[in-house]
Length: 154
Image (spheres, rainbow, N blue to C red):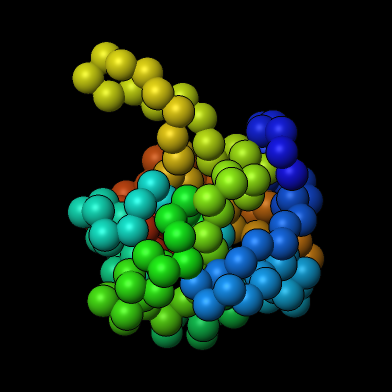
């Protein structure tokens, strides 16, 4: 899971095993038979990330009705995720990817630019994964306040 490679729709999603906010193991295999929205975001409690998480929360019943599960991933600690979930009443799991293995496997870690300076960071992107574990869609230009609409346009 170390190396970052380009992923495309129609390919198998990389397998993973990581810890959620409660220290429980989350694997891709657990979601076989369900559609999965796996979204990568930079940090808990920042404006854009909060807007995105709350948009997904506010539409969570629609996701369930359509057979989707939602899982967020960032490099924040389990404790940070627990606090973020509690503060905003998020109904889905957040994976703590402090070693960036999952981000790298899903090509969500890379070069970013701010004020003309380059640095490495989390690339905000979302993967829609089929019941069979195949990538159906990759959203690379996430609209944080209207992300649900982007997802359902699959």
